[in-house]
Figure 1 (tube, one colour):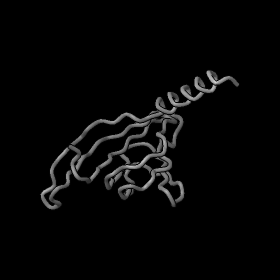
Figure 2: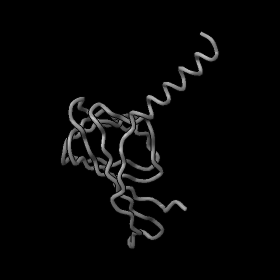
Figure 3: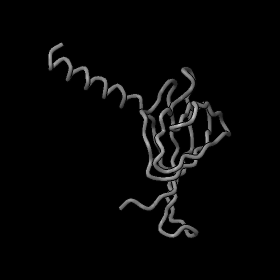
Figure 4: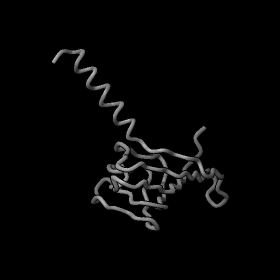
Length: 121
């Protein structure tokens, strides 16, 4: 395979991963009075059927609550789990979120994600 073909293949792979991302919608941002120097940031994250995001981590603690559908999730060192509407989990800051996506190939899924972290300038 030529060098140009390898580069083209790599770029196509990158863009197909980016196309698999989720839609994020801001919900709330507030300074915390009981945790000086920290803020709460909440957003809804929606996945189309079969959609997922690549492995990632956050520099914030996260509380995740499934609003609708079913979310497949796996944190480093833990098994894959499917969460349905009304279920939740906690992600400590810095932990690798190995699997995150819609568990269904036919219905959308939405979750509320609440981050607690120091404000980003």
